Structures are given as structure tokens and as C-alpha cells.
Image (tube, rainbow over all chains, first blue to last red; front, side, top):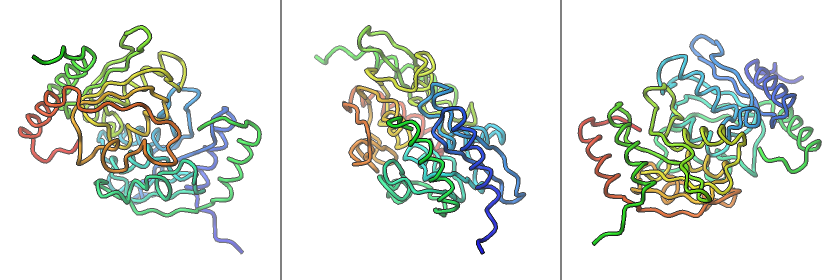
Length: 156
Length: 156
């Protein structure tokens, strides 16, 4: 018997599926206030739709949450994302002072947390969140595999 | 006798000064199409004004340029910025496929190009622009020093 699925990661996975339906790389993110258990912002990748190289799911929920709170800092907030964040998103997570990062599948090719530049381990990283990886990882990986199987060669 | 000042870096410095006047860390950026010599987008930091931890000058001109061209890729475009980009911006520059990055002052504390994670030197970095640092570096450093001298302890 497996543990109950994490509801926030399930919501992030729903955003990832919606992104795939839009023709975007299926990655979804949810920003949560752990004090209340309320999701502050949820979104999926919008790189193609927005003609925006920075419109990864993580960036969109960080920006939406910060705007909502009227502050560039999201201290105490948690971020759920279906895929290990890339270096851009990892650095943004640090700048936003996110408390805890919970991610799904690992990304050895383009990840920036547990692969590549390992942003939070750099001596010049001024804020490192707690990191929990591998949550619902196979669901996330399946979505990505299905997407890239259908559309070979498309970069995130 | 010194060389003629680079006009795009001068424009980026003007954006940095305007940012300081708004109470933002004085960093400015200009996105240029080298084929025509036309600046596509110019801006300065808007982190505080926009309540947006990702609103560094580089991110703003990358997003504006990509929107202008209707593509998440800015292949062949050059980016001028008054300060060495942070890891977030460096990774975004890579994602946007910028041809050449020209920056002013070095940023040993928070830079991500020639310091910290050295984003473009990572084996998992899928596109590395040509990089020229130190252009009008003292003008940029003077602006930053003046700003942080007046407002101690404020992070970018």
C-alpha cells in the first residue's frame, strides 16, 4: 500500500497535464503557504504560448505569489514542482527566499538543484531552501516521456 | 585618451541610473539586434516596484524582446548589462540563446557568469554566449557603490 498522494503535488501534476495539452513541456508548480495550507498560485509552463523563455511554471507561480503579497520575498512559502528546477528557476527560488522546495522527477540533463550547477550548494548562494525530491516522480516522468515521445527534439 | 564609450552600454547605464532614482538596485540592460544595430528593448531593475523577485533588468529585456519577436528564442541577439548577471539571469540568457553578452562590473558576491556557479561553463549548459566583461565597469561600479553606500543592507 502506498502513502496518500501529496495533494499539492497532485495539483502541480494537473497543471503539468494542462501544459501538455497547450503544447508546452509538461511541468506544473504550486506555491503554498504552509501556515494556512492554502495554494497561493498554481500554473504550468507557458514558454511557447507567451513567447517567453523565462515562463517556466516555477517562475510564473513565484511572480504571481510575490505580486499577490506585494513583496519580492516569499519567506516561509513552499514550492511544489513536478520536475527538478533548472538553474534559472533554482536561482529565482533562492532570490524569493522560498522555505521549502518539493519536486517530482529528477532532471539530470537540465536540472540545477541536484544536477548541473547545484545552485543551492554554491558558496555565493545567499538563501538555500530545504529540498525534498522524488515526490510522485514516476507520474511526472511518465508525463514528460509521453510528451517528448510524441514531439522529439523540442527543448523545454 | 580612452576609447569612445560603447553607446549600448551608455544606454544601459542610463537605465541603471533611472533604476536608482526609483529606489531599485542600479542595474540596466539593453537587448540589441547586431544585424541592424537597433536596440530591441531597454530596461532597469524593477524588483521593488513590481514586487517581483525575478524582475532583474536582464530578465525584463529578454522577456520584452522575445514577446516583440513572437519567439522564446533570441538567437543572434546581443545583451548589454551594467553588472555581471546573477545565476538566474545567466541561465535565462542561455535559454534565450543570446549570441553575445557584454557586461560592465564584475559581481564576485552574486554573479553567475565569471563567479559562483559559472553557468555557461557547466557541462549541462546547452547554449553559451560569447562573453565580454569589464565594459565601462567603473561607471557601473560607481553607481552601485553610491547606491549601497546610501542604503546599507538592501539586497538586490
